[in-house]
Length: 197
Image (cartoon, rainbow, N blue to C red; front, side, top):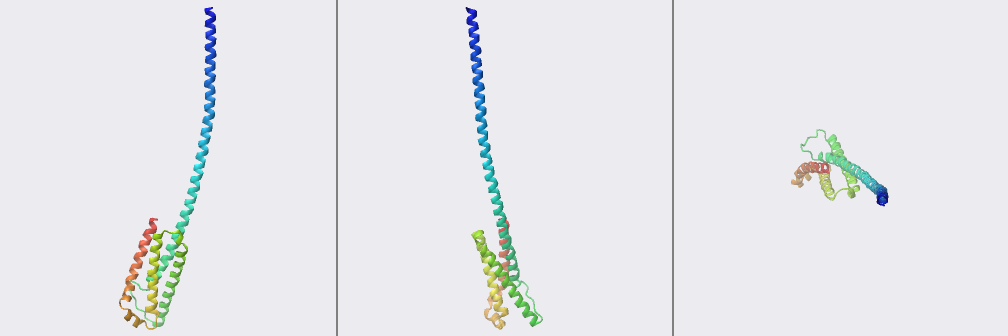
């Protein structure tokens, strides 16, 4: 009878061991399935995040390219405007030898400055919504100084009675030469500001 109990106990132990082993195998199988779904869900989540980041990077690159193009166009037209306007009242004055040739040069300088001011104004106003308010105000202040130079140049050099207008204006004539320095300084500050963007 002891032998039967031992055999029965061994059989029960083997059955329990088998049941425990099957339970562990079942749990391992279930853990494998659960792990697969967790990994799959994470992978899908990571892929969604990666897709969003790629889309954001693409949009950021497009936006950067657009902003760069805007600043480039503003810079090019600003440089042309400042160059032509700074020659209206240059830092060093020069003497015109031939009056007829001199008048042609004066008119040509005026028309060139006018053309460049209009081109800059057109670019500035068309891109106003796409630049910062601070940058716009700096561009506008520079533009207004250039317009002022253009106005006084026409008055002093292209009016038929320009000698008397220089005398009447007095300090205003000298201010125009000082304004050229101011315009060049504002341009440099704007260039520095655009480099920092």
